[in-house]
Length: 287
Image (cartoon, rainbow, N blue to C red):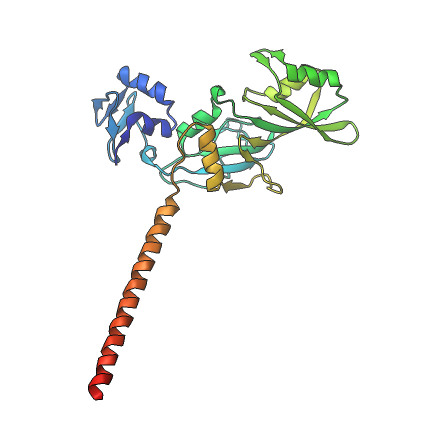
């Protein structure tokens, strides 16, 4: 079946649909060597190029995958690191005909929930500031925090890249010099949580993301482990991104199996009926 060109390229993670529509009008995209037109539809097997570069075949993959990963401290969120440090992609399941796209990033010294998907459009939507998807962090602070400091962080402070604030701050307890808080944000700027606390003179001794939108880090889900999202959470993510959730592939397979099973049952019933008729005729003939 054919699909709109901008939808295929957005799913491959090349850009948003609006960006791709602009590239089409600028003549930067070709289909089988010919300039693409707005509204064009494409099918599997056609050769798509953006700025002369061939789009990989996985762009046509319609059944996306979403993965939850518990990032440990000491991993970077890039595919390769010049310093040779381990990356978050090292432990992910190997894909054929597709690639994992990270939904946002976490700092080298930050642990917690990371989402990966093969759907580039979903990843772009989930990261875009306009969606205002809530992120929740568990943060350990070294030193005493006053009510005035917490109020200031919720009302808003000025950072180098603009104003910022926590949507909520919940006291999570602690002992000694360290104290835990759960904070929420509706954006994902670089080191934003740490920088916010630094504006009130607080030092973050540990930071972990525990939720991204409707997806929370499961309890006892150890660092370095990954797991596929279930259908309910997948649908919830697509809803938050403002996209239609893809129908689960297993449903069609299961319905086919059930249909085949009912067909075989009908065949067995008809055969048993015929055998019964034949046996009755034979008994009648003997009499």
